[in-house]
Image 1 (cartoon, rainbow, N blue to C red):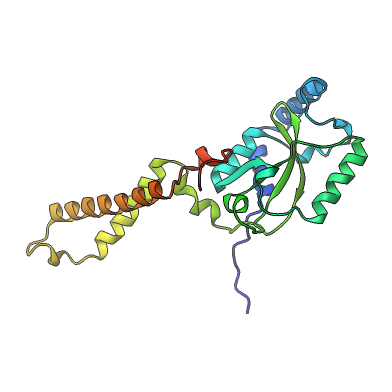
Image 2: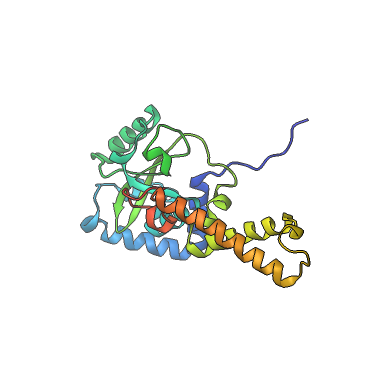
Length: 228
């Protein structure tokens, strides 16, 4: 009998949900009309907007939010260490033929490891539309682990990280035999041991983070220099 497992995370679906939460249908339509009106002046690619799929248009704020939540990066294609699949090149060629233009300024949204190693975890290829909007050209590879957002939650900011360390310290304190530290354990002994565990674990985590040059999600999502 097959066990039910959590579905893997599709980043395009996460982007769609973020866009829906940030904007109502009327807001989305208004934003796109504004983009269309100023397109001729500020675009970096000569798209014909009436031929674009509006469900593939995303604002930088939506891309940023999903990238931070899932510890992804949004960088220029030249920093991507993997090869684009043939299907991506085919989609690019079809768009160029449809819009009678040559596309440039490609961006990749993917886990940090894909900008250092050859893997296939759910990369997305975008082209800029202008005014901080991007058009999704192609998605390939494997969807992300279903718990990736939860696993990356501690790395969103220092408060989240300290919260996780406190939880780990609590469980560590709970399983430690108090009689090893005092003959008459009481509440004050428990809190002293909890504080000691918290300081010890925090020191290890912070040393590890600084030694490897790690940083929080908001600092790395569009920065090619910071490590992940």
